[in-house]
Image 1: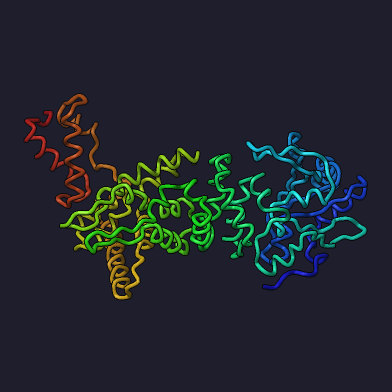
Image 2 (image 1 turned 180 degrees about the horizontal axis):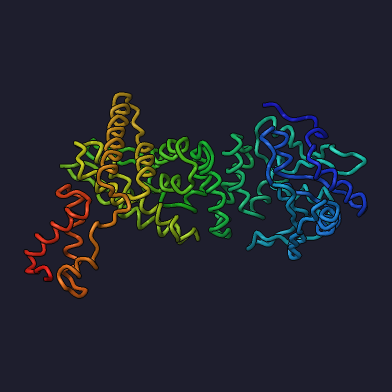
Length: 476
């Protein structure tokens, strides 16, 4: 891996010259630190946010920088945290005064005091995030690397600057961050650090669901999320965060009958879906699509192992997970729940003769999410048998083609009945009643079954015939 070594050239953005000038006028030292420096050295492209630490007031430095910029951007001040932020072009720049921190046992929120640059680097989570580049005129662009983070970058190692046991106990969120960085950067977590995560796993309980989910979303957004989830499992964190998932890591055998390991299968499905979607919520659906299998697992001599109703139960479990982790309970949760509940529908369809009626019902129930559902189900093919793999994918191609044909002809996606309840009331001079619901449902079923086309006249004629069976007569 090529590591950037010309640091001064790397600081070409004119904002760094402005910050340097502002620092000189205020007679404070300033440094760019953290993720921007890490990614700069890794040649990962420039981040859209920059952290600047001042050995003095970060708020005063931010105000001075704004004053020196042509457009005088607004400075957002967060007095409680002693930080300030401004936006320059398309980059957010956060300014903070150098500080040292101490922690209490029941909180990850530190007690903060003013400190030196060294104090500030000591409090950083990992050596690769403690790297700083000077913005001072006397040594502009010099790298300050007290923990040999540059070597850790070269060796692809995640390591804490200080004792990992203290680092993770003080702020347990760092355990998730270690795993997230290892997954994002394809780095290894140093052995002592990994052991410390396992030792302190229970401390994750003091972290809010929102913070945990933010890290899980970042792991799910990587090209190979299974790397992170296997580390979460190995360290015991996953069992504390998503016990519904670790419950799948059980393979039983009765009378020579066994079943696949649904935990490792799930991680394969998540990895399979990644090249086909950037939607983190579809990736969540892949992660949770089989969680109903652990509680529904049954063995009978006639059928062997079964998981009847696991999709429906999984949908209920998904909602409870969203509630427990304080995830959004809006359309995002409903989407994941819907994908979990419907996750087997196209698979069953692909195994049988694909009828127009079955496809119409699939499109009707999935609506705008039918493509996402098909993507999930294709990712669910994890067989190692090449012939079966090819056959299953070919079957899904047939289903996809049928979906297009049926949709073009019958227009059942986001289905609206061609004849409304108000029109039925007018036809038979009715007030709101049970009969109207019966007739509307009958029209829908007739269209989905292919008995009538999705057209007004066909629906009108059908309603008249069906109404006669309910002893209803047209208004004269």
